[in-house]
Length: 569
Image 1 (tube, one colour):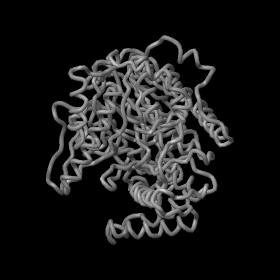
Image 2 (tube, one colour):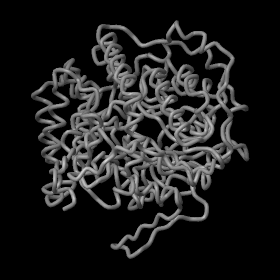
Image 3 (cartoon, one colour):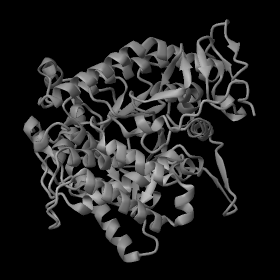
Image 4 (tube, helix red, strand yellow):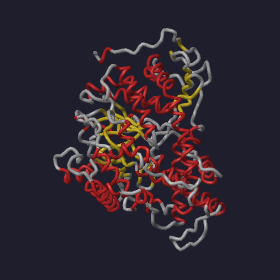
């Protein structure tokens, strides 16, 4: 079949929705603002494809989310996550995933960032092997951000993307050699409330995936995929049943497009504690579509706290003490490498969140040395590649991996890590060591409020204190504060010796908001949503029941349903 000429035919009964200005299929209602550029993406046929995915899989998704709630109840009642005896045959079986496509054999350094136009160009030009364009943790999912992101990605895949920075009078465009593009849709738990399908909000990840796939699969396979693709990153899974849904979605998309089964390839982020016990099972469900697993370590730390929210004997120390040298984190990384290489796919390392410190060369070199040390640990352990949050880190990360690996594109065959076969449930759950401090409480509060303020005003990836913060690191701040408050933790690491209480926390919030105002300046503070963010963050940290995700509550504050009949204004 000629991929370029294939057109998906929506049912003939579709009619334009005069209220929204978009031409929509039956049962689809768009509540977001009309824009002519957005209409290029929100075509009737593309929306029909998204609606078909929603109708086919919503029952499976609802069941998977119910299983998550049931698991949380078990953990809150004292149970621990562990390997499933019913799927031992999968873990012990001798099977492999499909061969890694040549286009993505070499993934030594990957850069991540939101689907903003300038970011996409800079990331594709950065010298990294892969750019993961993010609709999830690095993006505030406003209607404008989501739809402009889809427009940007279509232009990027077509090779026509440019950006004119008027302030610098500079035009950005793609180099001849660019990174391979992976796209990360949102997790299963997030709705897309600007699109209603049969009266229900669309599932965010199906909306993100469906629109991107529909418009780009043909061009991508010709221009970037060498006959394969598109390529994806899949976030926030807790169980292989969720991977099975994704596998069915991929098969449905391939059938719609008339392309070979196994064309779409995806890397799954292992960023929840329950998922570390399901890695073989997740790869097995996606074995025709998998190109590996990734250590999503910041979200993994968040998930550890969330999973053990009712376990006062498993409190974390200050977040900066929870690194890859902690036994439970090292065990997670080692088992991921062994699992991936045994199944013939990439084992990707974690994020280097540092950003260049331009006004302090000494501090900048110290930060780069920390990055090199972290990446050397990863490549020696057997990781096939790693993540960086900023283009300025790419040369340092690439040098470490190139020096260790030479010309080999990966270590799948050369580093098997059979020693990790002995890793136990106890290794993966071992209590982390370290101190809890008042400064840790303050930093959590300061970072959480500033990130949330940015998120509410449309920015999902924020440089704070020489680190790139996204939703994952803000989540650690929130759940750690919540747990310390719930159990009245004694802050013992800095000689303060006080217990965390509502009164202490209220004082910390007041003082940290005042510090934020001093740091950002009165004008920016006044124009931003820092006070609103402070109230929201305080409410989340002091809630009787821990919310599953910070962004679920905050999402309601950025949804804008355009008035009917005025959406073209």
